[in-house]
Image (cartoon, rainbow, N blue to C red):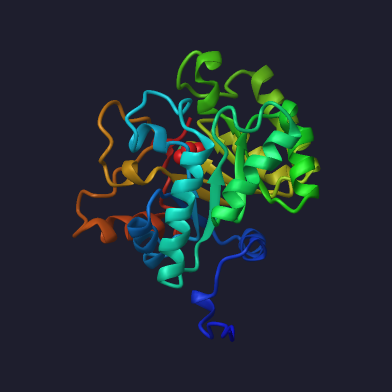
Length: 278
Ligand code: KIV
């Protein structure tokens, strides 16, 4: 088989190096969650740089109240669907698979075993939630060739411990703890950090101080990139809408147009606005 490299730089596959270059160049990274092959093709066509097969599929696909019941086999299944959707259209987006609750907390070995399931399904990076207590696991995975995206702030797998879906890092003490966690995860080799529902000022400080690529969801404009849940961008998810969400459907011609408007808004830094920040 001959591998012919796409001559159009805009269509070359996004790699971790591409994302690092975008970070250095100050080009915002546009990320969407995605769970199936059809939407993978659509999200790729409108220019998403990164697709995250999030365990939010527990909420938006499976109808659970929390992400806690999602299993690693379900995550591997959906990661495979998205990976095939990208492959079938020779897509360029970088693919991250989310490690669900209970699939990585027991031991570093358990985390490695389950990361392998997501990588063999087609993910190029795995995401896991948690701070200082996950540092050994992150180092273990990275040393074995598994790129890691960490997740701090509102970590939905800890919803019961956090007492609900609420902003994190709002007190001086919790903001300092988040900064310390971020520093430890960065030093352990995490390539990326998602910060969810944290004050914009805190996310700005972490982004300025650390090496890894920061992606915000309700974390202000200064992260290197932004992510939203696909169903939220399309205004599909019923119930109370968190402040950081914007529905891009009003005014759009169709689903593709709405997703394209989200990507454009991230790229031109018109989203998130101050009204989406904490
Ligand atoms: O599961 C998910 O979709 C996520 C994003 C909201 C960051 O973790």
